[in-house]
Image (tube, rainbow, N blue to C red; front, side, top):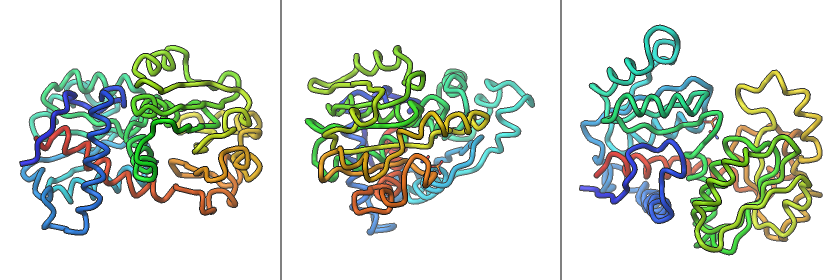
Length: 315
Ligand code: CP
């Protein structure tokens, strides 16, 4: 039987984990990645046998949805999709939906708008494991895949600098929080007015491991200078489409192109959570270069999500 020592019941935020738990999830993910080739002979292939996981997606998804479906199947569990029209609209109270689902499934993976909705769902159904598959505020599953990608290359995040440039969004927040827990230096280069809220930065600083540091910049060149990684994301996250044209103008100086990459370390990696808007936040030249780790990040979504499912449900 697979056992974990994780204290958290839900995974709504990276800060639901302490540094040791985050390192343990990444180590488990690395093991699952190694063992995947064993197929049904893998020691975890029946770990979720007899358990159901609900998938509730209110926004489009390729990577998160596919990797959860495949991951649950590979762990011997079953999944079902809950239509967001019946679960997250006005048909019935959110707490009633949560309390019904709790009767049938062990866990639920939710992609929605407000983080508060996830917290309300978890509070209403204390026996249910709730996993954040992206909200407007946070994308913790993405950060797990990102940091596995880096830790498997470097061995450790300590004494490394990751620079995020662009919109201080959900991806930036979870990436920063995980970096802080793992002892990295995190640079955030965002236009004035687009930085993460000060209370979010303070909360992450309070959780940092010794040697970790979080620094904010307005100038993208200063943010990436000497960095080991340059990371960017869309300038217009889901839900902010009405601001797209204004954002294209504001963020133009933050495009990750060969000139900006040349300011980072010579062996620096480029990262992006995808989907990418080529020609906007990143050029083809950069995302298709040998420095690009985007497909490793995407692959590692599968292994890290299997690890978080096992951590919450498998013991
Ligand atoms: N990066 C990410 O979450 O991709 P999807 O929106 O396709 O799930």
